[in-house]
Length: 319
Image: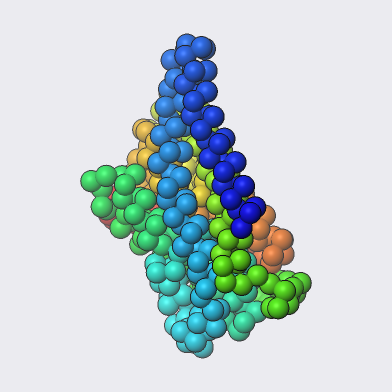
């Protein structure tokens, strides 16, 4: 509890100092580019933090107070049926992408079919209520964008689960052994505080980096170069799908980053929001460390391809 309070206080102090010194620095430098950069950065960060906090609170509460056996009892043994149910569970059981990998690993060790656990791994950070509400606020008056994100993300998670059930091999998936006993693991309030501290501070750093990268992208990249991509719906979609992997923005805040990327088509922004929670650099590293590099390479590359195709089809149909 003490470390959580100290960490939260430190984050608030840093945010306060930056919010005060940032405008002063922009005024001292007195350049339109710096002022524009700070405006975009502040807008993305300030809008995203509340949803990031709410998402990590809910995720930590589920991890601390919801027994894992609940998942095994609710899912049917038939993988073909378990996959869409596990994917749909992401709508009511939110979790950030940083926590989804260890949760999926734990579910597999408890007897949940890998295909169902992987479907939940992809859907939970992508279609949970916090993410959908954040998307509706980032894109006001555009309910089709929220619906498109829900459909494309859920379709990607279910398709990946079915693909693993059909083509996945056990030797590709390396499950780590338990290093701590149940008696030594934190439970209840201690587990909640530990999970909240880790998820919020860890994901908050990626939010700041993502906001800075989005602001830099908007300001530093010449308009003439952007016109090459924005002039083609295919190139713009592929570019934002690639940026989603590199920027590593938390799913609770990526909608605000996507909304700030002016000039791109709605379908390209949809691809950014669908790919990001499922495939980015930090997730690839987490998957490689948890399940092995062979799994991470195959699963991440296939997920990226399926997410792009799903976003393209849903964007063409709905947006």
